[in-house]
Figure: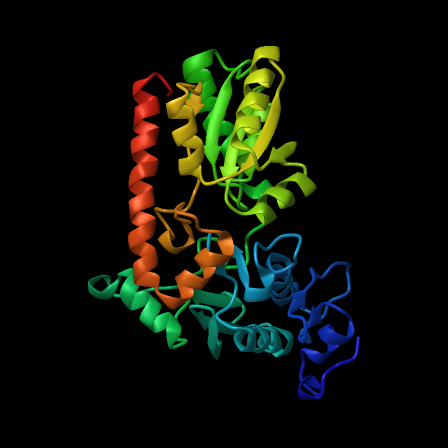
Length: 339
C-alpha cells in the first residue's frame, strides 16, 4: 500500500505498507500470523497492538470509521491521531516500558520494569460530583474525554460471540429453566436491540429451541447479524414479522426474525392485538447510553444521528419520553402474563 507523505519515517509506516491500516479511508485490519511487528520483538507489546487492531476491524467493530467498537459509542481511542500515537508507541517501546493511556489518549511512557503492565489505562473517569452526561459531553466536545464501554476502550472485545454464552445461559437459566422446564420449544421470545451485544439474543433463543422476534431501528445492524449467522431472516413489516413468528411458534420451529422497527412500535402492536410473548425482554441502550436510544416519533437513524449532534439535550428529552412508553408497554404485557 502507498504510504502518505505525513506517515513516512514514522513507526506506523510499516503497518500501513503491510495493509493493516489505511489512514485515508480509516480502515483497520486485524494483524495475523507469527511475524512480530513491534521493534522489541516482545509478545507483551505485540499482544496489545494486535488487540487494538482487532477491535477496529470492520468484521468486529460497530462503526470503525468513527473508532466505535460497540455499545452505542464505545470507542477504542479518543481520535485517529491518538490511535496513531498509540500504535507508534507500542511499536517502539521496550520490554520494561509502560504506556499510560487516559480515556483513549496516550499521555506517558514510563520505565517501570518487566513486572509492570505494558499498558495501563483509565477510561472516562469523572469525579462523582461532576459525573453527569452534560459535563461529559462538554468535555468530549473539547477533546478531553471519550466513552469507552467495558471492553472497547481496553481492546478486549471479540465481537458478538463474546456475549453469546452469557446470553444463552441467562435466557436458558433465568427463563427457560424457571418457566418452561429448560426448553423454549414452541415459545415466543420478544426483545429489541440487534447491536453487537443484543445481536446474540436471536441465536441464543434459537439454540434453546425458541422463536425470537427482535426489533431494531438500524437496518445495518440487522443485516450484519444475518451476514454473521446470528439472525435467520428479517422484514420491515410489523404484521408480517408477527405472523412469521406466530407461525413458527405454532409449528414449534426454532427460528429468529428481525423486524426493522422501533421497539415501542412493535410492543404497541402486540398490546393492541393482545399477543402475549412467552418471554419479554430488551437490549436497547437507554440505561448506559441514552444518546444511542432512538425515539420513535418519525425518526430515521440518520435523523437521530443529526439531532444527537446538533441538540443532545433535546434528544435526551425525546429519548426519555420514548423510554417511558417502552417500559409502560412492557409492564402491560407482563401484567397479561409475559415473564
